[in-house]
Structure formats: structure tokens, C-alpha cells
Length: 280
Length: 280
Image 1 (cartoon, rainbow over the protein chains, first blue to last red):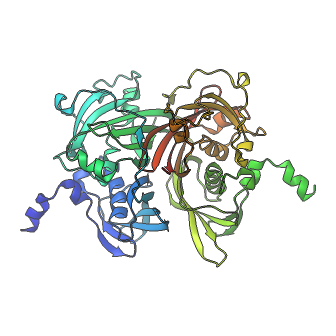
Image 2 (image 1 turned 60 degrees about the vertical axis):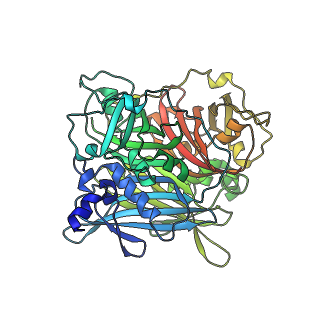
Image 3 (image 1 turned 90 degrees about the vertical axis):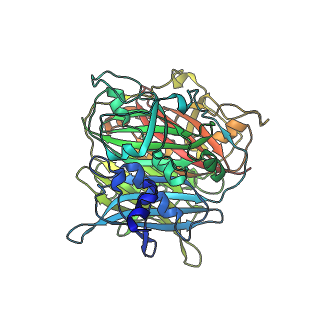
């Protein structure tokens, strides 16, 4: 198989997750052009790389349960180093400190991303979803969304809006920032933890919906709690998941967003929160 | 003024925030017995120390807007080192990596806490609270809560429950885990960012309310987004704030909690999320 056909045989998401050991706890990686946003990679794909760096680390204990990613500086097109340090290993849990560092043309290193993560051995306990999935039409009954907002990463997702869709009139009218949509990788790909992490950032900025105004924005911090067990993720497979997000507070240049992701069978797969910079 | 009277003249919270420079980016600190929980300090006070370490750092730029604290290992009674590293400084924002490290009797260092934080220069923009404060009676109309659950840190807060109070019957009956309460430092103390950070962890475990069963628990990760401006915090002063929390998903040994804190005038001061370990 030639390099070219091997390239195309793999899903864009898997190519985006590629990283090579380059020192103790260090991995060489690059931002995927397949997930490019306006001036850098889609934040979700960077968060997925953080999750992937931990999950593929030879000393990793258990499954990913929590990850927080801080977008400290612009990630560019140059290669960078992901350092994933197991800062504390307990009997059944492990805590990680992760950074992305990039070297500029003058050889100067700078930190573009800081992160922490926690992994834990699976344990079987009483379980219960308090945030139940809202009643919505099945994904098969909803049209795929198309937009005039052209960024490459949007082509990597099949989005079927149910509520709180992308504004069609930028008239400054205030509305609730609650969005619900079916979403899946495009082309379909079996759901795993890095892909679920990436999905948690799939929503367009809440402030655009709240204000019906397209102001400059950028996520500065994203937290994902993975509730799904390995079996529950496997049961989702390539089916679309239900994604819901809403802003809580918009103040002095930052707003936050709370989000939930459910399987089509109503299993709460992940909850997420993020803080977003905005201008004006 | 003698050392003893000086000690008593300061609020317990201020004593708990005390730290001394002990090297580059390093501060010597200790867990306050005034905020002791069952087998270590109250998680909120550790989060407040993380916030304080950043805020008192001579290189700090702007106000705290986001902090994530991971409780990696037990914090004991011994002194420890808080290291707060400014990992990235931009024109108007700054990103921090913070760790707490403790030395055991054999001189071995271990990381008990990992954290990241972000500070930012205040900017005046369009602002709006989407999560409005629920309608509740004023704090003056609500009785202070007393409990048979004796932990020292609870004495540091004046809690006035409105909804979803501490269960009185542990009969295993399922109920929503939504709690609302007025809360303030006891004795009263003007609200600041470290105190607000600490308040975000003031709720008893959601799973105890959800299940009416007191299973072993421990917070493993806490995120706080500070929405309040310096002026809005100052306007709160020593007034009680309205604190609300609810669990979203309980699965295989971990549940999450989403929380909001409002000023009595209805200003959303902070939003918070945490992931909590539970047994059984």
C-alpha cells in the first residue's frame, strides 16, 4: 500500500490523533488541517489530542474520566510537543499534567496549551442519570445542517439541528442560548473517548445565538467529564449523539457554557463546560 | 499586639490563606485546621489556596477568571509547597500551572494537588446573565442550618437551606439532587475571589441527596469560573450569597455537579462544576 492510499484509508480523526514518542513523556504532534478553524485548529481536536496523549501513554492507569484544557496561545501549523506527565498515581486513579509547546523560527519554545486530566480504573457501582435526555425526533428524521460559515472542521461533522440553530438573521435580537442537535463524525466513525472529547466543543459560540451578533470569540478553557463506560461507548458505535449546550453568564469579555452529550438510547455520555473569550 | 491577639484578630479564612515565599514560584503553606473535613482539609479551602497563590504572585496579570483544581492525593497536616508557574503570559491574559507537593517523613516528595488557572485584565463589554437567580425568600427570612454532621469547616459557614436540604431520613428514597441555600462566611467577611472559590465547594455531596444514602465520597476535580467583576464582589460585601447545585450523571464511581452562585441582588458571581468519587 502506498503512503498516499494508506493516508486516505484512515479516518481524518485518526490522522489528527497521530503522535510519535520524542522523549520522556513527550510526543511529537501537529495540528491537523482537516480540523482547521479560522486561525488555528478547532479547539475540540486539540482537547482530543490531550486526551489521546494520556490514553496512549505506556504508564496510563484506567480510563479517562476528567480533562481540562486551557487554550493559552495560538496553535499554529508547525509541529509541537505534547508532554503528558503522570503527576500522581494512586491505587485506582491517576492525575496528569499536560502541556503543548511549540518552537518558533528562532528556536524559542512557548506553551500554547496547558491541561490536567484524571484517569481511573472502572468500578461497577450504583449508577443513575439525573439529567435525562430531552424528547426529540430521531436523527433520521432531521435534515443535515449546511451553512455559509465555511471552516474546514465543520466538514468533519454531520450536524442535524433540533433547537437553537445557527442564527439566520444577525439582527441583535436576544434569545435563549440553548442548542440541541444530533451530531456524528463525517464520515461515520465508532465513538471513542478522544472523539467524545472533541464533540464537547462542537457548538457554535453561545453568544452568537444569545445576541444574534457575530462577535470575535475564542474558547479559553474546556472541561470534559466522561460518564460513559467503555461498553456504553462501544454501544453507540457510529450512531449520532444528542448534544446540548447553553450559556450561563456573559460578563466583561468572557462567557461560560454548560453542555451534555447523550447516546441515542438516552445514556448521558459526557458533561462539559467551557469559558469563552469574546470581544465587544 | 501579641501574636495570640493578632491570631484571633484575623478571620479564619485569612489565616487559612497565609503563605510564605520559599523559592522561585514557590510558597510554603499548610492546611488550616479551622477548615478540617473528615480526613483532611475541606476541598474548597485548598482550591482557595490555589487561587490565592496565583493572585498574590508578583508576576500575576489581571483577575482570576478560571481555575481547575484536581485532588490527586490526601492533603495532610504537614507543611507543603504550592508552586504557581506562569506558563504563558499574553497581552491581556495569563495561564498558570499550579501544584501542591508534600514531603513525607522519609523526605520523599509527592504531588497532592494539580491545578490550572487563568487570569485576565478586566474589559468592559456587553454583559448579560442567562441563568437568572431563582425566586427565593430573603436570607433574613430563613433559619440557619444546624446538623449532627460534625466537621470543623461547616462551622466556618452560615448556611440557610431553601430547597434540597441535608436528608433527615437515610431511607434510600430517590429525589432530585437540586439544592438551594443562602450561605456566608461565619463570622461574616467581605467576599473576595478566594472566598468565592471556596464557596463553590460548600454543597454536601449530591449523591447523598439523590440516594438518601451516605456513601463514602471525595471530590476529585473542581472547576470555578469567576463571572463577578471586582466592583460586583465589593458590592456583595458580607451579605449571604445564593448557592445552587445539582448532579447531572452518577456512573461507575463518579458523579458530577453543576453549581451557580448569585449575589442577593441577582448577579451571577460564579459558575462551578465538579467531579466526585463515590463508593458503592
